[in-house]
Image 1 (tube, rainbow, N blue to C red):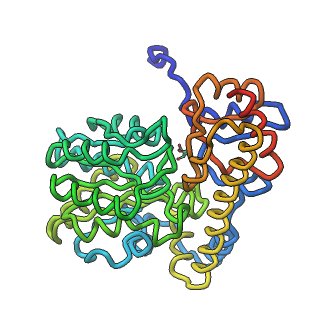
Image 2: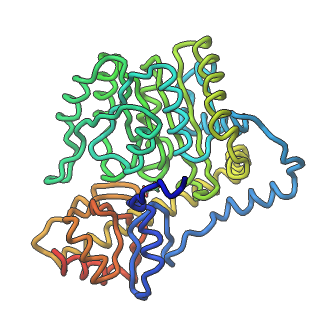
Length: 393
Ligand code: LMR
């Protein structure tokens, strides 16, 4: 039977991990997959995570099943982190999920059960895996205008116009902060306007918050979620602890669903648990248990906020560094969009052919669209990187 399968191309983002690993050049640079890297170029386990893991080793008494919705104390901690006090608990259904991807996939299953004909509108462009993940689940997807590839800004008027034309009841997928891939987010005033259109058109917001704490700070980055939660009857929010806790491979995510009232919440929770049971039964425990230990302990929580700030500041510093280096090496080109973006990503703004030349001639790896993960930049490699970029322009 397996011989009937046809080959498929490696994933556009994950494929770069192996390509970069197999490249023997010493000066190669990985600006591909979205993982944080320190100034030394590695992705260390956060110190606060190590402490919480030790505490778990010392105190955990059982590895028995918890259930499809996962650990209630983790879910509650994530609710406070993401929603603050924006909504009444009785309207929120919550699930711990295997990463943000697991959260998106469970939400897709639930949307399909509720409205099999619903369309999910995604930004153009969006995270490369949104389309296979949600489309592969069986949802219909369409795009709304988002990014201006010539001026490197959000096409905000076109975005609002597109949202005004979305049929009532459809779902709009939004990035809470650190838009992946562009790194450009709406301002708070723009989020207010988006919310007005969403409520006027009776659309269902579905907010993907994979980078909370990587743009400005934990609270500011949650503005869209909290603002909308106070105004819409229903919404989905997918959260991830991959980046802000550095727990990538432990697969820690959450799905928070705001329902119109308690009765609808109870049914949504039952249905979501049922979707999970039929898909992967229940989420992995370890990473979520670590997050729960941290968020329920004031000292660890404040240490975590500090470690998160260090990551965030480094990303910003690396953008500035590359921007300066490019001003020297490629003075005719304006790269100021690099420093207007936040989080891990932004588009460099070169062609797919130039991306290939960067890889082949210089060992510099980024996604075909020229999305760069700025965490791969260091004070040691930035001059070489700027030189390489200038050479392919
Ligand atoms: C990325 O966009 O690089 C990250 O979110 C990792 C992934 O799974 O694609």
